[in-house]
Length: 298
Length: 285
Image (cartoon, helix red, strand yellow):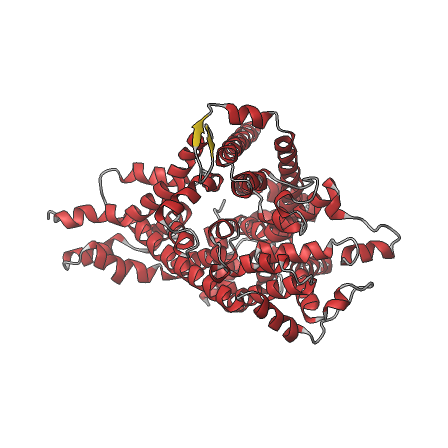
């Protein structure tokens, strides 16, 4: 039976929307970023070709390196604890006989459905120097007050806390799903052999989760390097720089400040290109490390 | 009975659960929920108490007043409607379009299918959010700046969604069933709507839900695109409340709380399915 022409082109029509959307709003803008980065480009005025000038200026710009340090700092402060905590909670949730299991799992997702904007408003208040709950608690034990928002490490810690709060539960569920795929016979045998909680965690849980751990490292890296909303909303007085001395301005926020705050599209695009290279480099590094770990395993 | 068998076969440790596991998990729940509680506490006390030490840690009776203030400071009803329009359009469109493409990749034969699917998977690794400046230029050329379609159209299909739906359709919809429908003279469009889609509707629903939540909470792109207060989504309205001349911490807090309530209500109904959906989508082993 030969299909009609309509039936033969139908599959292409079904997949076309994605390719169209990706081409117009994803791939083309990405390629065009590389092009715009070569210009002195004002959204309303002229644009003149300047070659690699934007990049030369960028690499001499202390604001760029500051944003780079902040981005990597926040990424590190948020990713490492997030994955470790998620691993621990997933291990705790992975009991067949656990009561209230559904309630525990659902609660893990509450931060995920809360918007970043709302999260930031709350955490900024919790970390406030004068009226924040955290400083009140610190005061009770004789410390502080700590002005989190004013210092570099403090504001980065604050932002990292928001990221950890928001994503740990989601990551926990991913880990838990992988854990549940491990046959309970293995744990049973280990338990019979007298392996306690910690040994089961170390020798059964961690090794079998390796693929999903690599996956979450990659996704949280790609997401973590593009953090924008938290630093924008943390500082009320100087939102575009995340404070008067750019103490927590990330690369994405720097891009936004230059592109949409100062209308330097070319310079902003150059930041975008650098960020792109950074993300690709991190992804490659992750990939290399993970294949290396896999190969080293006997 | 089958439920019991499934329970027993499921993975997971089987030793008795020690009491401290409950303590630690309860602590995790408290940490997960506390910021929302705190939002409610600050939003329901009057502004003066927000600036008092020690802070009040129980809700007050001022929520209504602050809510009124939110609605009079920014067009917040409009913002909630805008958010709902964008999130519903993306939720439904994303669920259906990804199911359709996933169906094509899972069940239809056509030249170039495998290559095209590989391209779809590869696009997942491309960080396109970095291209906001040209994206803005395109929207400006289309005349879509300050419109809701600028938020909706780019979110209608995703590589992740197609990948997800393809997996579900490949494992749920049997080839024999489709073959039988073909012999009865059904074309692929009819087969999709009458056989394939009804079978994978739960998966499409969870996918739509993920799209809905992401769209409702999105910030960067709406912040770039939306200019006039009547077009703001709820998230951008929160930012506007934070900047408003009324220096009131409770105001932004009340706005955040009001923007979160719809999500919490939705979550109460579909949270279970969202949890199992996320866990199903995770790769196993």
